[in-house]
Image (cartoon, rainbow, N blue to C red; front, side, top):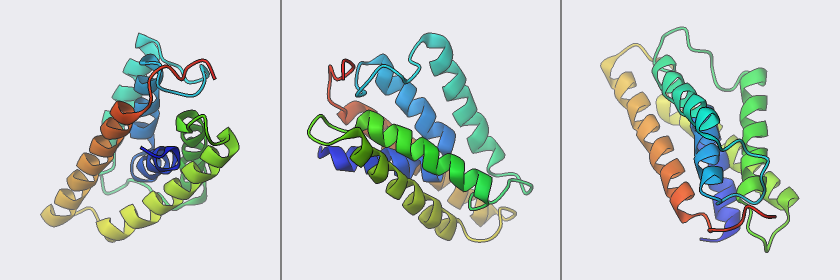
Length: 155
């Protein structure tokens, strides 16, 4: 997999479900599939990140869930995308380039995820779109972790 694609992809996941991206990064780090060792990878951080991802998926369906485009939420998604993009960047590209690709992915995921969801979360159809977004985010995150190169934890 081209490393720009992995960096963009983890950012895209962050745009859809920010905590799913965090959980995926923790799982990737635990398997030695990140560029460096600054992603928490022990059992406790992995468990907390995974629990936070599941909680975010549940909370996202609530009518009081904040819009992902508000400045604090968007900033967090961009930051997670940047960190994830740098962590999954291949050795043939710089961490800075990976971070930019991750941020671009986060912006794309934020905007496309919101557009796909529509304006509300109150009908059964809206719930189905939210659940579909969960499946896309979790599936893409799993694919990225599985496709990440082995043995990159020393970089």
